[in-house]
Image (cartoon, rainbow, N blue to C red; front, side):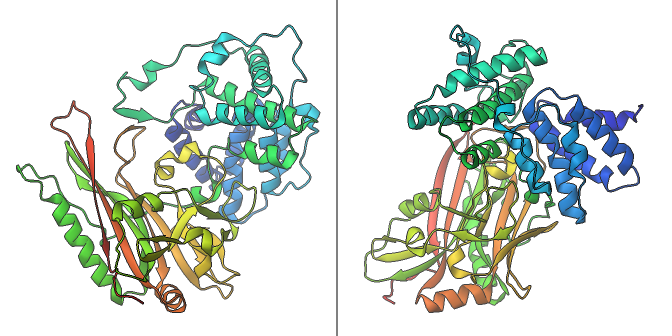
Length: 492
């Protein structure tokens, strides 16, 4: 069947090297599936899926109807998409179950190539590039499985990769320096080539092999497979907003003395004072705060509950390092979405004492499977939610176009996470966070009630990163300016 050229180009972009291009193509396909062109778009998408010879690519495409169902509230005919997948995997089965096809599950024996023959030798190409075409985390996971289960997981991975390359006619291409257009490490880009998908698909098949009588539970294998899904579908529904007016921004200053940091810190102090009368409290924020060609400013705001029990104040740099530690909360589900009741670690796992101050963060990272590579611009700052301890037990996560929120049983919104950006590019500076921003607002009553109950004070820790270089061909160097706002040394 003939399809419009524009639709064919969108489908082609689903296999484009740049992950940002894939995400934007998926966005447009979802829009078309909600328009008068829905039937034609669905037929074209299913036909495209039928032609895929790599497990990961077929699973990636499921993100589009999955998001459509979440946004419109309609029941997706999963059978149409399941039938189109000629190369099923643990990942595609898991995604289809999340979409509503509860019984979708292929036998594990159908999802891998059995044991390799004794004559099989791992290709040098595989050993050379297994940490290049896919993140090193894949090889680290393989090493962990070998140690824990005493199985030759890497050898099976290599065997599956070799079989996929033969099946799909994929050549042993060299590392694609041409796509980066520069051999410098000043800029980075998140991209997937055909070989990336071959390595990833082979890993999915090796996971099925490990779960088929080799000691890995099927649930654990599915959880590891979900790490290969390219996007968090729930978060994909969110549309970036405009930068809040209270977020500080300083312009480029060409004078010998850089006055921008002082301006940013002054604006932050004003924002702290202004929010004392607002209904919402900023408990976390991270984003670009202005700059020019040779200077960039990136700001982090961390909300804390603080209680002093003596005269010794903490080193603010140590507190910032602790706040960057990877503790999070989630919905407790092996899911590519973020909906559901919010749960996390116990209060003792989050709290810590520095000097004579007891500190508890007001926000933690949202735990999501893997690192969604189509959302790399978000994942560099991560997604944050209120600490579960200060929320009602029945609080749940929800999402709409404006952002991710926590809602109480009575429907009242207790928090709102939102994101903005000032223009995204496929290539970003390696040493400087992207020109994006995010913040988390919590209802004032929630914050004040928890502070009163715990006999603590709400405060901020500000961490301003200043990136400077003498000229545009030099590397950026960064310094940190960190301090407390609203804390007290008075014993409480």
